[in-house]
Length: 155
Image (tube, rainbow, N blue to C red; front, side, top):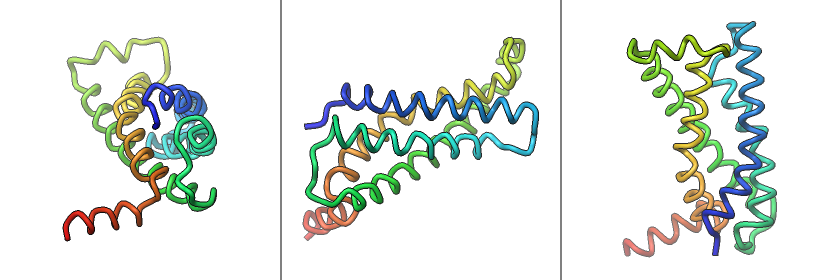
């Protein structure tokens, strides 16, 4: 059975790759305004995806009997939903942190402090969703298996 603590360790390694990539992209964003927060998060998510899949498959979740590429495609689908959720949460947090009450954040000695903090907050908030989705979908037979289980429950 997959434990949340094991997932936190393996996903933590993937998150380091993800966050470092996003922070580098945001550094580029500070110099080139054409790159958006959403694009930076999408690039980071793509980089962390493979690390997360390989470590989760090896150390956290039991095999569900499907081939690696089938599990990866399901993992990719869940990861895309996670990235979209993270983008929504990041933009929401950026809007919140952009309120006048948080103006002091602009004095931090880093470029784009609101965007950086919003990204880190979104990563933290979406972690539980990510674990549950991978546990119950990615490594539990995929989307079809979940749909089949739902229709069986309804019948």
